[in-house]
Length: 148
Image 1 (cartoon, one colour):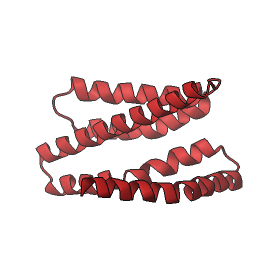
Image 2: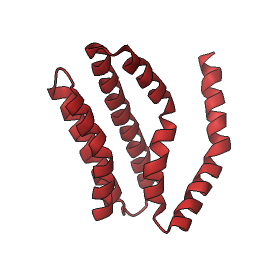
Image 3: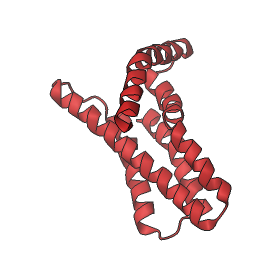
């Protein structure tokens, strides 16, 4: 059953990935901005919808333990997702012998991953302030990418 669900998800990905990329590219062209920024803003919330539902379930319990679990889960998922995507991206660049021209886009991702990783490792209990700081890293990384 798990293999069937994975195969179904892969099929959906194959069917919808091309049109989504085309829509994001067209949106970026109409807005007059780089497609990177449009994708940076719109793709993460849509691809993490399952995590948002799980987060809502944890948040509905309104206990200190559930909130800490919620924030730790979301931070872990973000780090794993970013690491996986960055690793695949680096493998493609290496395999195709492409020139490296993506430092401005990559550096903020790595710095945010390090900041989130350190906050999780160094803190025993996460607070609302930790959550606000983690949330603030998203627009900060976009701004950093734009400035570089």
